[in-house]
Amino acid sequence: MKLSKRNSGVVATAIAAALLMTACGGDDGGDSGDAAAADGGSYSIYIGEPENPLVPGNTTETEGGQVVDALWTGLVEYDNETNEPVYTGVAESIESDDQQTWTVTLNDGWTFHDGTPVTAQSFVDAWNYTAYSPNAQGNSYFFSNIVGYGDLQAPETGGEPAAQEMSGLRVIDDQTFEVELAAPYAQWPATTGYTAFYPLPEAFYEDTEGFGEQPIGNGPFMADEALTPGQGITLTRFDEYGGEQPANAEQVEFRIYTELGTAYTDLQGGSVDIVDTLPPDAIASAEQEFGERFIETPQGDITSLGFPTYDERFADPNVRKAFSMAIDRQAISDAIFNGTRTPAQSYISPVVPGHREDACEACELNVDEANALLDEAGFDRTQPVDLWFNAGGGHEEWMQAIGNQIRQNLGVEYQLRGDLQFAEYLPLQDAQGMTGPFRSGWIMDYPVAENFLGPLYSTAALPPAGSNVTFYSNPEFDAALAEGNAAATEDESVAAYQAAEDILIEDLPAAPLFYRLNQGAHSENVRNVVIDAYGRIDTAAVEVVE
Image 1 (spheres, rainbow, N blue to C red):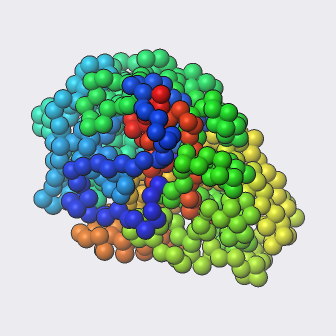
Image 2 (image 1 turned 135 degrees about the vertical axis):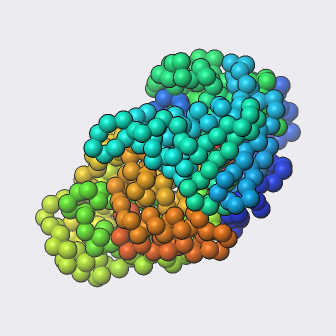
Image 3 (image 1 turned 90 degrees about the horizontal axis):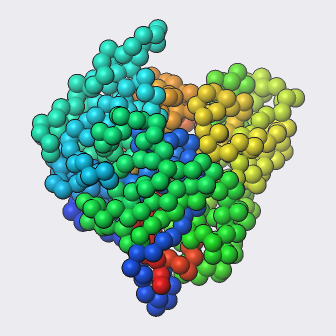
């Protein structure tokens, strides 16, 4: 999922049959001494402005995603300790004899916030709506491996799609539906806890626009009011919640800030309760200031420098490699992030199987080779390059450091383009509006190496269907990715995903920069604050202190 705590040695097993366990774990993110938890109460969370209305099929970024995850529960959830999928969601089981045709059986008793039941049809209709290209849902890509997905895509020459429903989805009864994939994919059940796969009530189709302002989900919190742009939304505990962990607090307020620094100042003053990521200039002192209320854990993410492959200046892979080789990742981590960013030499995060510590040779500082490549490509060094990033997220200092290294090591001037808020920045990426290298952040949606490759770089994930905002496309990469998805064993899938990554490294549509050791903190008003490896606060687990 677009951007934006667990031990980095913990990895998620890839084969679904081994992954799907029966109990969900959690950890204590720090408490406030011996203070007792109040019965209910209210607390607040910092978020940035969501890009789109709060509809699961079109929520592809962290800010709206945090709210959507409080409002919905999917087929599976992810264990807070291991990151693995667990059967604590709506699904009782997801089973297959051939890893290609899957039978999904739902638990009884789940309802939406409007009192209507969550049924097999609730999932099938939602998935078809998201996959149908005229609906322009950003999560459409995640259904591309279901039989019939292609029939829901409008022809490039214009006209309507051939169908409105995927032939690979079949409702058996209210509690059962069948999913036929185009090829075997042993890890498919592990993907179904992601936002794209959430169910929708019938009320959604009656007023899709109004629904996005005041959604109706099936999660631990419900929306009694509409989201106010620039301000936020307050959710109330759903007392009829069907899951194992109902919300501890009576209310949670998602408070929108345009500047991360302002949110951090409010946290210090006690006027906002949870900030899930801290400004770079606060990292060195935050642990001492907050003590047990400081949260630091590895995250399943990657920060990259994306290249607009559609721009003539960055169409040559050698240019992209040169810019990557001109960056001293370790120096930036030490000077700006206090050593809490690990230099990345793979597109795949260390928290999932398939990561290699030294996969990307072009991710190492090599000034001489960088200049040779730039000369070979005939790059015009007299024209400055634009460096893009979203405003208010604490990115200016490290992006400026990258610019300074590019100027020093390549003799190319730069200008910072950090004037757009997150909700403006993402649509400009989708519209091929980047005029130079740009900050790209990604947090995993599910614990499979494919999630760091397919949604970002496959042809099927080009906007509006997905998040491939570099607009990279290579049939060889797509084929290697498909081979990994269809592999019968974890070892075979990892080998194919690494082969796909090798193609990416040769083309380098984006330069991997950092993996994040995330820092967050909370006020004395709350305890049991968990920020997981997916970058999500477990809103139901948070307790308000008396």
